[in-house]
Amino acid sequence: EPEVTQTPSHQVTQMGQEVILRCVPISNHLYFYWYRQILGQKVEFLVSFYNNEISEKSEIFDDQFSVERPDGSNFTLKIRSTKLEDSAMYFCASRMRANTEAFFGQGTRLTVV
Amino acid sequence: AQTVTQSQPEMSVQEAETVTLSCTYDTSESDYYLFWYKQPPSRQMILVIRQEAYKQQNATENRFSVNFQKAAKSFSLKISDSQLGDAAMYFCAYRSAAKTYGGSQGNLIFGKGTKLSVKP
Image (cartoon, rainbow over all chains, first blue to last red; front, side, top):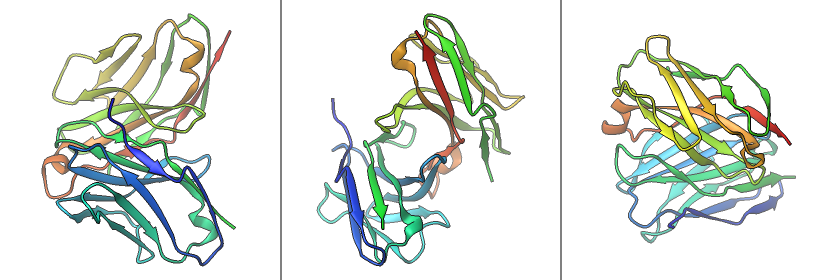
C-alpha cells in the first residue's frame, strides 16, 4: 500500500542551525501539507502546497520556514535558524484530489538543543 | 475561524466494551468534512473515519461509527468491541469544503485529542 515517507525519523540540532525535513508523498497525490505537533499539544497546520506553490500558510509559518518540491517527488520543509520552541513532531501529509482524505507520514521528531 | 473541541482529555474502556469519544466544532459553513484520526504511541496519524457534512447517514467503518449531529455541530466517535490495539490518542478534525475546492487547499483543523486507554 502506498504511503507517505518522512526522513529522518528523529533529528537533533543545535539552536540557530538550519534543518531540512524530507518527505516523499504518495506518487499520484497533488496536494501537500506540513503540520506540527508540540509534545502533548494538538496538531497544527503549517503550510499547504499545490501546483508548485504555497496555497496557504498559518501564522506559525514565518520567514524562518520554507518549503520546496525540488524534483517532483520530494517535498521538503526547511527551518533556517532553529529555536528551542521549534522542537516538535513534524508531519507531512498528501492528498490526491480535492475531496479525498489526507494521508500522513510517520513524522519527524525534531529536538532543538 | 473554525474551531474543534474535544472535551475529554482522557477516556478508559474495558476490552470488548463500547466507548464514545466526543467532538464539537464551530463553523459558519454549511459544507465541510469531518474526520477522526488515531495516533498510537508510534505517533503516526492514521485515518479512522470520515464524514461529509452533506450526507445525513452516519459513517461506519467496521467497529468504528460516528454520530453526526449537524445542527448541534457534534461529531462523536463510537468504538465497539474495544481492543487493546485501539489504545491511542484520537483526534477529531475539520476541513472546509469551500477551501478544499477553492483557492487554498483544505488544511485540517484538529482538536486537542482524547487519550483512550483499553483495560484488559
